[in-house]
Every structure is written in structure tokens, then in C-alpha cells.
Image (cartoon, rainbow, N blue to C red; front, side):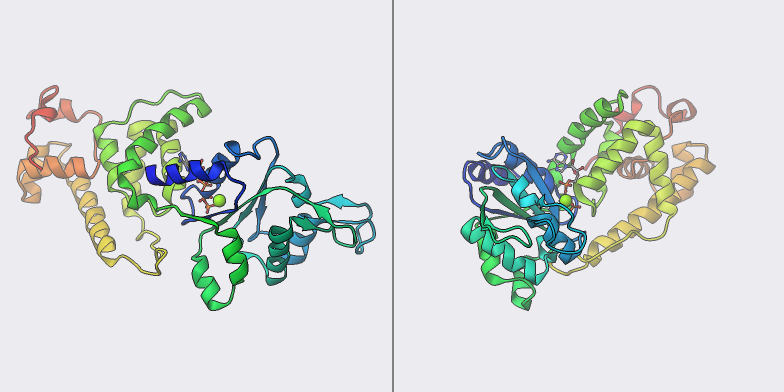
Length: 328
Ligand SMILES: Nc1ncnc2c1ncn2[C@@H]1O[C@H](COP(=O)(O)OP(=O)(O)OP(=O)(O)O)[C@@H](O)[C@H]1O
Ligand SMILES: [Mg+2]
């Protein structure tokens, strides 16, 4: 991310188009707004165009605007988003979903910095920074013939790929701590600092929904507290298998699925045995036929906790948990 940040800071100072590629929730829109706020175009508007959500003909009139009488229902003239973005930033989200006819119009806009409202002869000039985002592999779309090659090269002058959160695990805790501060302020609710237990849960998860999923998790942490969120985690263990979907390369990481499934089963069994033994970890270890030390390690790994565990566990006095030699 440091490398991406360096590149992005250089891009900010130029008027050139930028293409952001990354799975859902990796922060494409956040980065686009970051660039806008530091660019030559920051005094203008940041206009977001969701290419996936709006059907072609409607998108065209929203984008380019229309003259009075241009079509049935055009009772007055209306400027489009392109005009609103003059001296600002036009952000095309899910650009891969842009219909063929509009791809041609966007290409023209990028080439000549000119456009006309629907039903109007007048050519209008616009000076706007164009940033596009896609959660699909646009190069593949070009190869398949679904996306214009010439448009691709126009929008991808700078091409930045945002990694999935599972590929930048080293950042998870820093992001989590930042989000705790942000969301505590937003919800006006003090949240305790992340405990080692919580951190282990954070590091163990796959985060297929990327930063958005982490943000939602932290929101629950802030609102429910550490106990509440860990109780939720154990409930989740009983739910059916998680929603795996192919990663960007079209692969399904079978190794991860198996490891994750085993961890989930283990956690469920360990929790049940701990509860049956009223959180007496020595007895639970005997019941599970593993060493006491191994159980302590697994409890930590699984992010399990019980508020009163210290009082109920005669083996461990105050602070003793920290003295348990965990090895690696
Ligand atoms: N660097 C970051 N630091 C903190 N929070 C972030 C960061 N990047 C993204 N987020 C948060 O994660 C969430 C998802 O980010 P964003 O909407 O930018 O992702 P996206 O790639 O556009 O996702 P989608 O494809 O689903 O639209 C947002 O709520 C945003 O506030
Ligand atoms: Mg987005």
C-alpha cells in the first residue's frame, strides 16, 4: 500500500485519467475521493456515475443532459453530470458495465473534451478529471470484445490494482485501530482498545468482503463491545459454510476453505467442552485429550473468551494467562 500511495500521490498532480481495479470493498471509491481532494480539480465537484445501476438510455440523459423537447417528457432543458463535473472529477464506478453506445460517447469526451446535450447541436467544452473503477478484470473484457480497446487505453493511463485485504494482512490491525477511532467518534461511543484475543480473530479471518467487511465488523465491536462481538463469532460458527466465491483470477482457494472449516469446527467443539466444564480449562483439556498448553493456545487462536474465566479457573490466578509459555 505504501507503493500504491506513492504512485497515487504522483497521479494527483496530473490531469490524466486513472483506472482503479479491485474487488468489492477494497477502497476504490475512497481512493478516488482521496485523489480528487488532492488534485488540481479539488475546487470542483466529485460526481459519481454508477454505470452498473442505471439502464443505458437513462444513463445517457443523466450523463450528458438534454434540451427541452429532445424526447417525450423532456419538458425543460437539463444539464447532465458531465457538465456538473466541469473543473471537478467524474468518477465512473463499475466502468466495465458501461453499454457499448455510451463507451463510444465517453471515448469522444475523453478525446475532444467536448460533448453535446441530447437534442442539442451545440458542442460544449468540459474540463474534468476522469477516474474509473472496476471490480472486474477489464483487460479480459477487452479480449472478449466486451469493452472497447481504444477506450481502455484512454482510461487506463494510470492503472492501479488494489489488493484484497487477505493479501495485505500486515495492514489489518492498523486499519482496525483506525476504524475503532473513527467509528467510536461516529457512534459517540467509547470502545476499549483491541485485546490480544480480538486481534487474533482479526488476523485469522479471510475478509472476503475486504475493508467494507472489516469496517462492519469494527462497527459491531464498537456497539457490542469485545464480549458481544466474540459471542457473535461463536454463533457464526454454527452457521453453514461461508460464502466463498472465486477470487479475481477465477480460482477458489480450496486450501483456505479446508483450513477455515477445520478451524471453525475446532472452535465449536472447544467452546462446547469449555462450557460443559464451566470454563475449567484443565478439565476441558482432559476431555479433549490434548495438553493444557495446547488448549490455551487454541483458545487464543480461536479468539474464545469468558469474562469470568479467571475466577472459575483455579489453575490460573490474576495475570497468570500472560505467564503461560505459548511457544510459537
Ligand atoms: N484506506 C481506508 N481506510 C479506512 N477505511 C477505508 C479505506 N478504504 C476503504 N475504506 C472503507 O471501506 C468501505 C469500502 O470502501 P469503498 O466503498 O471505497 O470500496 P469499493 O472498492 O468502492 O467497494 P465496492 O466495489 O463495493 O463499491 C468504505 O466504507 C470505506 O469507508
Ligand atoms: Mg465502490
